Length: 100
Image (cartoon, helix red, strand yellow):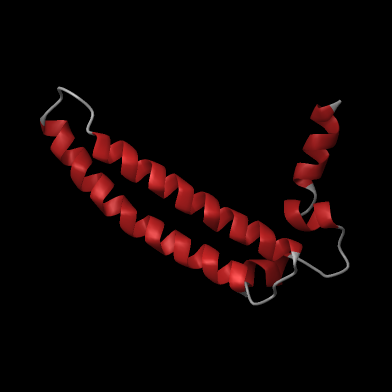
């Protein structure tokens, strides 16, 4: 439950961070001289928050946190760990095929 909530709130905050990025991008579009550092800083914060959200989802799959709807619909407690993380084993196959 903790990982799902953490990922959810990180994604919501990342959504709100996108509004200043949009605002500063429009301002920077009018002045083409130099890229504003505010855009880069907000973009980095948004990237960090989306990464935290993704890791929250992955951890929900690992610990079989069925309070998350995506985990509830696509996971089972008896599945192996790699199968739970990759959702139908696609990542496991890619690592096996391309890793050699």
